[in-house]
Length: 156
Ligand code: COA
Image 1 (spheres, rainbow, N blue to C red):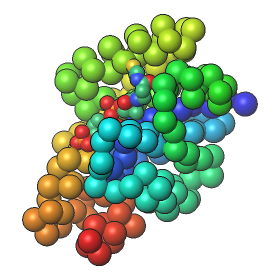
Image 2: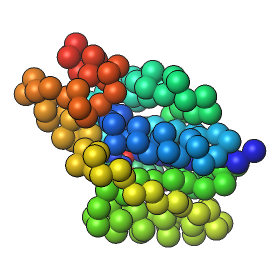
Image 3: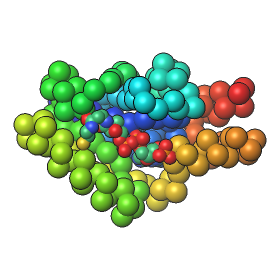
Image 4: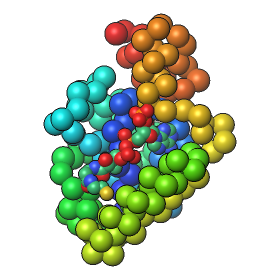
């Protein structure tokens, strides 16, 4: 069974992330979406809530499993026996950052490969920071996040 790993902060999951999840899920038998727990960073949503939002957003996609992780990505990849990591690339800045991370993960993961998927143009301007900022000023985030996330942002 071929498994691809899609890691990130997902604070919160956006339609940009969903674009990658939908497309990546068709490339493997199983897509493991991993929410990073960073003990040094307090995000907007606690990791458990990020997982719940991802699970709700991915409910219709059969082969997606959402997990939480802390530690090195290469160790998680080894533990879960994944064939590759996948990351979305929105532009040249992402490309530079992701290339550096891909090389490090290849070294740390004993040859672990990273697939870089260009974002669909209609979502390439979206980031979690932008969503948090719009929500903080009570703006409308319906075009940026799945409905379940928009709902939680309105509740806050
Ligand atoms: N669509 C929309 N937004 C996207 C996106 C996409 N396709 N891809 C990335 N983003 C956004 C995220 O929303 C986030 O936005 P924000 O900064 O506004 O919140 C930003 O890009 C960065 O993504 P994020 O998921 O937070 O971080 P990352 O891609 O830099 O890496 C990990 C996160 C978890 C993969 C990385 O930190 C990691 O591997 N950590 C574990 C420790 C480790 O192994 N370190 C060595 C790695 S070489």
